[in-house]
Each structure stands twice: as C-alpha cells, then as structure tokens.
Image (cartoon, rainbow, N blue to C red):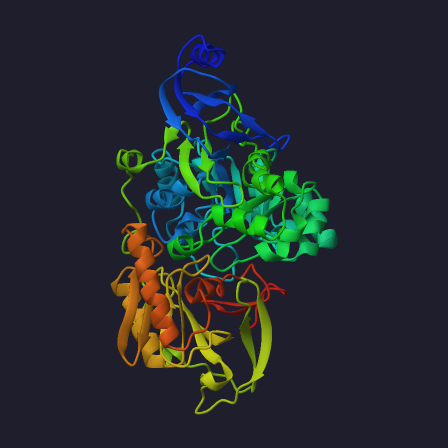
Length: 564
C-alpha cells in the first residue's frame, strides 16, 4: 500500500511512477472521447493520465485502447463449477477485475462456513471478489436445504472487507407480505446495498418490493419489465449466463440515456461457455454488434456498475482510482491483451504466487440409496402438471398433459417429450423423494443426474428409464456430487464436484473438457438442449415462475405453494 504523499508526488512527476502504460489511448467514459498520453500508476492506484511520465517500469500498449476493468455485478462462483481460485484464473485475463458474488449455493449446503470460505478466498485473489451475504438460505420453506441462515447469523459475518451488502432477496413474497424473518434481514442492512430478485413482479407489488430499499434487479427478462423497473428507480442488470440468456431481449433498452442505470452480469456461467464465447467480454461484443452504442456498453460494464454498488474507487481510468485496467484490441472486438487488477499485471506469475485456502464441504452428499421403484409417479388423475422448459430461460411454463396411469404409475413417454424428473434430498435430513414430469429435454433414453440443483442443491435427476435414473443418482454419492450421464446400466460420462457437490478441485481447463464429454453424452441420449445440466438445476428453484419441483413436490410458483 502506497502512502498519500507518494501518490501526489508521482502524479505531479516529482517522483518516478511505479508503472506506466505507454502508447495506447484511454476511453473516457464521461465524454466518450479518447485521451492520448501515458497512464501512470503508483502501487494499486492510477495517479496520472494524458501526460508524459517517467517510470520504474514501462509497458508498451501501442495500438491498444485502455478501458476500465469490467465489473460482473451478480454471479455465483459455484455455478462456474470451479473454486474461486480457478474462477479468478478463468475470467480475470478476460478483463473481469471485480466480481460481486452471492455464495448462497454453498451456504445452502453448509451455512456460514460456506460464506466464510468465500470471504477467506477473496483475500488472495487477483480480482476483487465482493462477497455479498446470502439473504435467502433456504430460498423458501418449500424445500429441504443443508443449512438455514437468519438475521442473527448474518450479523456474525458482517464487517469483512469483501462485503458491500445483502445478496439477492429472492423471497419477494416474504418482502411484500412483511414476513418477520424477511423484515429482520432487511432492517439489518437498511441504508446499505440490498440486491434484488423479483422476476415478473410489477405494479403495486413491485412498488412495495422497491420500497423495502432494494435497488438492483437481474431477473428482468423482457424490455417492458426492464423499463418498468428502471422507471421505478431500480438499476437493471442485463444477464447472460449459461442458461439465463436475457441479453437479446434487453439490448434495445441499453442506450446513452439508460446506460448510467444499467449493468452487466452473468449469474451462472460455466467454463465451457466461457471458452467457447467469453464472459463479460462476450456480452460487450454482442451488445455492440446488436446496435447498442459503444460508450453505453462500456459504461454499463464498469462505471455504471461501480456507481450502482457504491464502489467509488473504480469504474474510470482516472487519477485516484484503482488501477483496474483492460487493454483491448479495439472497442468492438473487446479482446483483452493486458489486464491490471489493482495495479498488478495479470499473468501466470501473479496467479502462481497467490495465497490459497483449504477447500471445505467434502463428503456433503448423504442421499439414500435409490432403487428403480423410487421413481414411480402415482396418481389416478389423467390430467398431469408438467414443467415446460423455455430454453435460454430459467422461467418455465406450467403445462398440463393427459398421462394415463398404468399399474399405478404414470410412465415417461419420450415420443411426447414427457420424461420423469425427480428431486432427492441429499443433506441427510429426511430422505425425501419427489417425482413429476418435464417437457423440453428431447431425451429418448437413459438419465442425467446432478447435485447442482438451485438453491437447495439436492439431487435432481431426469430420465426415461428408472434403473438408469437410480444408477446415475447413486453414482453422485460415490463421487461426492457433480454431474452424471447414464444409459443401459452404464455410466457414460461424469464430472465430480466434491466441494459441496458444487465445485471441482481440478483446473478450469479440465472442467471444460469434462463438460464437453458430458454434453456429447447427453446428445447421445437425444437431448436437444444446448446446456442441459444447468437447465436441469433451475427446474428445482421455487422462486422462479411458473412450475418447479423440490424434494417436497411440484411447486406452483405463481401461487407460491406445493401442489403435488
């Protein structure tokens, strides 16, 4: 850490700067103009732009454009399927210098210890990982999670330097109907930052939700929804994850007028998608290609994000701010050629010299041994509730289909794309098994099982064959969680995720290759979804409309009640 006098002296040129970036041009996010001249850095802080400086170290960035480091305003590191350290190594070289995460995935498995793990990890990463405190563990009372966190628990982990507020408040019915537990959490963070999560909420209910002091929202999926929330003072985060793909729908809303109130986020994005397309860099390229002004897009990626979350020390390349800088080939291409995080060059040596934190939550999968008969779906009514997948969305349709029972069981019917879905409690609490139907996978045979199952992270399994479903689900206990594809009594592909059943201990490149094999195996079963594994995970999240399933049964999210 440099002292104040050093910064001022280096800014005036009275002392030699620690580092200078020379030969590039700086994008000024205030006026939209380009600024020529050196960028001088003292320690972790920018001290000069637009002038000539002497420096201890000079990096030539001739021909490159310098932009502020990108800020992912909402994500779950666990959904990248790697530890925070591998996530850092995966996305920071792409220009993501700040990430605002909600560790509620691991918190739903092991509670406060999961939050503390992320807080400890944040102290050693190159990127600045902001760890929000998880507001909804569990997300509702309609599921069995591994832990429960109330307001008194949150007080125990407040005050860590990585925290800037309360994470996404998913229990929006609890807010608008003034549930005492929800009110206690909101009061605890009153006056601070509280993240939102209110899909399809509008009118007076939306007014009530915002009146609670909630200021950001990443669940808008249409332009009209985004505009209503913007008009009511919310900062709208455009999301483009591996499953939740809202960029195309919201891109027309992002322009020079709205950019100060819009940000970018990924929410859930895995290493295979990052390798194939990118992270926030992909969103920037895509938004510009679809017609959003370059200045508006880069503001949303950095300055607007910093202001939305009260991060006053970043978001611009300007004196006195953190030296979070990305040197890109050009604004439309947005391919990072050099990245600085807090004045530190992001390279292999920097990653190799980071500190480490011992992983937690091993052997967390304690599910009952499953048999084929556990996946039968009874009932005398022919009329059957069916979850309808909307590819690229985590919202679903509430469908009804006629499925006649045979021998006391409603069987999967691949010819109608009606396959069995089951959720099995895996935290060792009650051994619940709930079954139902889902349409949209295209699966013709076999089974897919996963312990990535938002947000309770029980076992979710889909399939056409009960024996394969049992095989896949039981295999998850043996490998400490992850993804499994099975057919004909054989395991075709798997990805172990032994850290809470959510994260791999392997490098992100290995996880990427395993995901490639898993996708190929799923396609071999007839699956037509581009990302079947995370799509499956969201079918168990009972705070996203319209029909979902937990270990307690099918959930009508619109009515917020279990219906079967």
